Length: 332
Image (cartoon, rainbow, N blue to C red; front, side, top):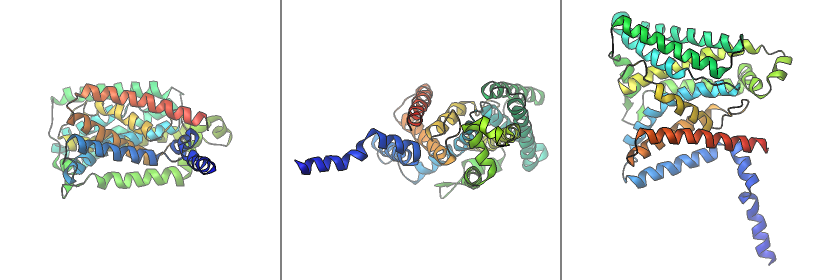
């Protein structure tokens, strides 16, 4: 009897709810990577032989733009905000490059698109940081403004569709040995900058501080309005880069190209452990979240489900995961 009791006692710490809550709270990468592995196995079981180098290359190429857009959400959510304009900014950026590249050259067109995105982010940051407009309202309104301006530009140039520059097609859809996408040349340095910036720089720590306790951050001398202005400019620039890669990946330039990626970008950040209330999260989990959603999309496609089912599932994931993380953190 004592041996059985001892074995039960030895197992109980790992089986207790408190341990699992602590795991999700403190080391979310472990359950996220386990979930990703299970989804990969499920994909292989649904369509035997599908998981291979070509499949991995396709998943990575599709996940890179989503991971960058989700990075926008991660950075803004750390401050207790959100950026609903990233879809419009990404679409606008890809369309501007496609419409100007033939006349000005691709590098100049990219610079113009980045400047336009930065201006949108600057206006958003001023609205949120200076005039205290709620980020949900400000970014939603800015997204509509950007969409309207992009439509106006489309009518002025009389273009319903334009050709994506070959440089962007190479970067967005090309891959070394059909496995490693060239878009890794973009996201790897970007991810390194974000990861190091969040954990090793004063600006990154200020983002966490504002989201965790804005009053204490202000009393400590942090000028939150300046931090927020810079934050939304960075978010808009990241969205523009994602738009470049997405247009290259799909070989499509449209003023609504990235609209469907808005909900998944929020879902990827939430799945990755970023709290919608601010002050908790990181970009590492967000990147894994983007991979998880991309594999889920591929799996549902293999099962023959329409895109509407995918959207419903992503919405349910946001609600369920956000509620789970809120419960876990409230009990810590």
